[in-house]
Length: 443
Ligand code: HAM
Image (cartoon, rainbow, N blue to C red; front, side):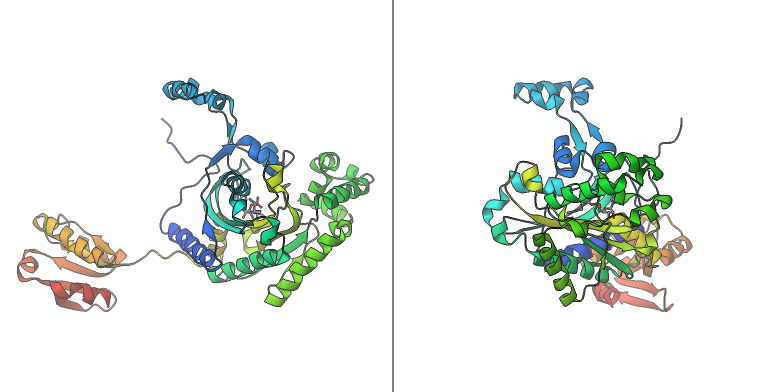
């Protein structure tokens, strides 16, 4: 029988690397708290039409990369009882409902915003999330089929100030602070504006016209995009196409006065806060919901998949999926890529050292050793518990690999209440009364 392995594009994350993941998440949560964000958890799968209408049918994500399934399969394969129960409750239509593993989380957050009528509070909603997303992309370093995002959205009715360029600048400033606190040096903020939907439509037509004389020399994808969605030509990575793309008109020239003013206010606030950025005219992003500000933070250490995170404003998304007017701005960081970057910067996850390794001398003191371990752990110490069947040499070897000190517990120690403790760094061996052990180990 062939051995079972994790599915292509998915990975097991193991210690000690997971401690790096935990550090990233803890730092992100601390920063989100400082900026007054609260956590939202939305389902891993949603109605397929949410992504089709929210992210856009024409995007690569929706047209090629989604994991879509129908619960009708379940009904036919052993979940018949549940299927019957469903039909009794009138949930039969669910059988033909198409579901999709979330390829991103902004559409889900906006769906939840609408469903729970969060706009009626009249307040800005500042929501963050941490969790897995799924895209059927060709796996490579930094690109997986199950990957993790740490993201946040600021959304609300216009009366709450959700359209203000200050919100854009504040989100970008928060990201710069978060990357700095994570110890990610050398990032670049790429910034652009894709304007209002009308600006984008106008620019698409300008591009379409500009592509006519040159598209014949471009790659097949570009030839298709030039007809279906010329904007996507700007995403092309084929080296031979780059000199042609460099001569195409830029979206900045198609923006209306309002969008130009909005963008100027974003950059003025970034300048005042001292957050550096590069204006990147080609940054139109691969999701259709963006309006006005778009951005990515990139890092040279990542190779081809160099986007650490991406985001932007989506003033029409709520209405596109049937909700009230609720402008918003947000971002998602690729957690896998943050880990890769920290590793490239040589911030390896050191295996954590425990405070003490308890070595019971003989199986008869195993139970007493567990009681001692419980006492120390409850006092907040990190403790590894050995086994009485080990010879002392084996206990010392195991302890030396994981712990700062070894605590020896034999019949004599139990009787006298005086334990032998050896510190591996100093080589000093001490006799410590049990009542003083916690304080001794905490030093
Ligand atoms: P996105 O640019 O599609 O935007 O993804 C955001 C980040 O997720 C990327 O910059 C990258 O770091 C990471 N990422 C994407 N795909 C993969 C993959 N296959 N493997 C590893 N990492 C990946 C969004 O998802 C938007 N929802 C962001 C947003 C929030 N816009 C507004 N609010």
